[in-house]
Length: 127
Image (cartoon, rainbow, N blue to C red; front, side, top):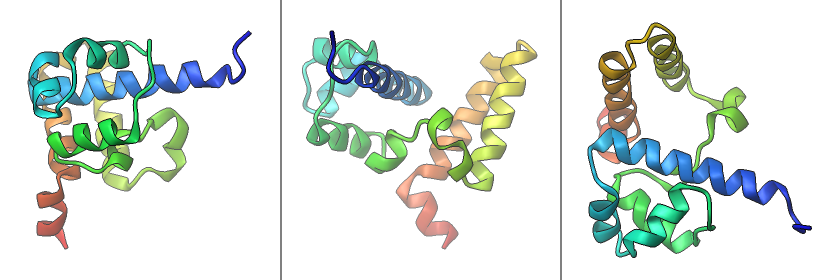
């Protein structure tokens, strides 16, 4: 019996979040792993929720994706009530696009908007 059964869910959610954000940038697992100084097979296991990830590795991935660790690990289902208006707008757009079968076009545009919104450079420009 696993001592902390919720850890499996957290590993899976964080892994899915990394995969989602990586996909939005067009980076392959191999390319992100190279840029974040990780082993590609380890990153693949992380994305599939098979293994946990260190804070140091999360930080390198976040820096590579030009975001903070907090933004990288922000799981909408856990923190939906804490989402900013922009994040809620983009999430609604993604959900609508996926339910309308337009995820490929609309979803990619929404993902691009999220990545721009969470980019450190975009935040500085908006301040």
